[in-house]
Length: 109
Image (cartoon, rainbow, N blue to C red; front, top):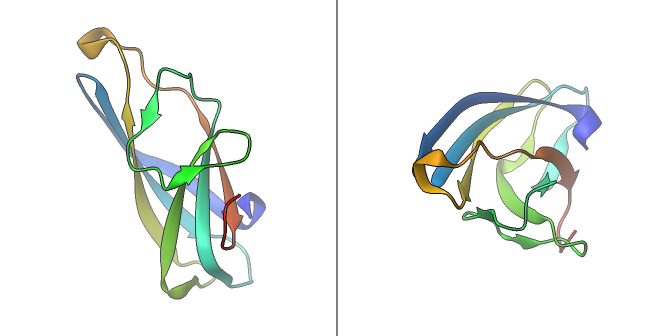
């Protein structure tokens, strides 16, 4: 699914132990993306929590389940999604480092 989409970070805000990153996800393919979009956050330190996670994958990575508008993401259509992280270290905490992977489907990844 990641190959069918363009993911762009459009904002990042850090306040104390919380970091919020905002992404624009665009369907860059000629096919419709349907059902749910699963945003999997990979490579996080064990000390960082994704506050708005829907669950974790079988390998322990947090994911966010996004219910697409009208159940689909048409070609060139986009959505905006925030990821909210809680980290240790307060104001001196380094920025959260991770990668995103996208899947389409229902159930647990």
